[in-house]
Amino acid sequence: MPIRSLAPLIAAAALLLLPPAQAQPAAFSAADLATSRALAARAAQSPLAYELVDSLVTEVGPRPAGSAGDARAVAWALAKLKALGFANVRAEPVPLRVWKRGEVQASLTAPYLQTLVVAALGNSVATPKPGLQAEIAYYADFDALKADTSERARGRIVFIDQKTDRTADARGYGRAVATRINGTSEAARRGALAVAIRSIGTDRDRFAHTGSTRYADGVAPIPALAVSVPDADLIARLQRYGQPLTMQLSLQAETDVPALTHNVIAEIPGSDRAAEVVLIGAHLDSWDLGPGALDDGAGVGIVTAAAKLILDSGAKPRRTVRVVLFGNEENGFDGAVAYADKYRDQVHQFVAESDLGAGLVYRFQSRVRPEALPAVRAIAEQLAPLNIVLGSNEGTPGPDAGVLMRRRSWPALELSQDGSEYFDVHHTANDTLDKVDPAKLRQNVAAWAVMTWLAAQSELSFGPMPLPRSAAP
Image (cartoon, rainbow, N blue to C red; front, top):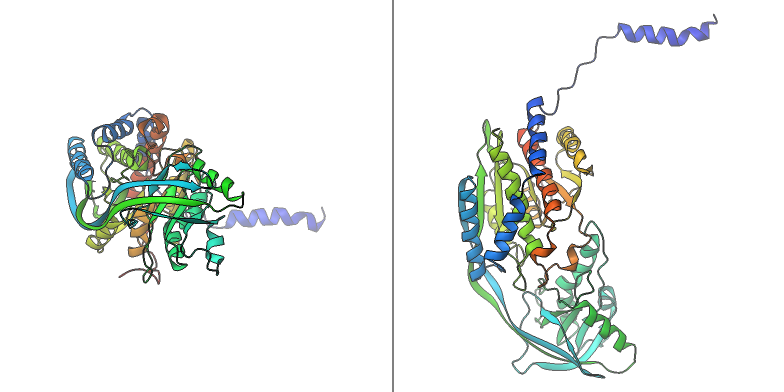
């Protein structure tokens, strides 16, 4: 036999002489994995999440922060969480200053008379009592306004025709929403009398989408409103005629009103690592135009039902599972800021929030220290039967949870929902219970229960995370 042909045999013999490799410890015990599978199976049969959304929407309805509806929602949440058997159920007060909507009317008066379906944007100042009438300065998108160095906007009502792309991951909304948030200040800097925007939504229905706008420091505030998508199409068609468009606008609102909201909290106390917290959250408030079934009644139902499955499983989590229903996510994040301040010194294994409606979860992502990634991958294996794939370690945990992650550098987990249809009704009067699919809710509950349970059991700590340079003290 040629010497060259002996090489593979010699290499194989050498491998037999090596000491056996050290077996890597399992990320989770067999018992923990069995509990995880049982939670997913029970979630597939549980009607609780839908029942909670139904109850919240039917018995409370719209619940803007600081309103009577908000107070009813807090009382509702306290009663539900106590009845479900959670421990340490409490409402933590959050003082704040709120915006109150008044009457709004808008119409085109030239070249043709057309009544518009509109909604004032949150934080908008009022027009003078008689209203105002002015020519429209049309901009095809937000970039066109930002690029304009002329005097075209001065003394006019700026209209920004920014369209929102339909995407599963909310990226289309993310690209468009800057128009609503910052468009008012950009128009005001150019001397506009008011600003109107195409609703930040993907629907073709004649509902206007509200949402908050912001006034930059040093910029005189001007009235701001959103126009329904079909009416925005009308304005776009009319401006092509080359004739002046004029709008009559009357918008009434109150700003900077002292008020009180609450974060509502419930817990499943942990065992040997009870001082550490796994936080699963949603926001209890909604905008005032509708009952907020998807935004964020669905999230309230999902995280509460997931925690209830763990509570009823008979298996005690190592870390404390904390359900947090945040106050005033919609117009200021006051609840998230208050939580970050109060619990700044408590170790959080992760923070996460359900706030993209009731679409199926399709992806699991993290933002943890690299040493914790084996646990993340092991959790992903348990989520795979739910048709959930593992994404990156650059996850975003939801709006309030994102505030906590950025302010405190707490680790975060994300269960990405399919948001393809969410922005059809987001921030509108059309966000009603009929948009909620009970079957899709059950898949969400299964995913949240599995993720929460295993992260609470992990031998690996998901933090501490490096402190970002921009983190607040």
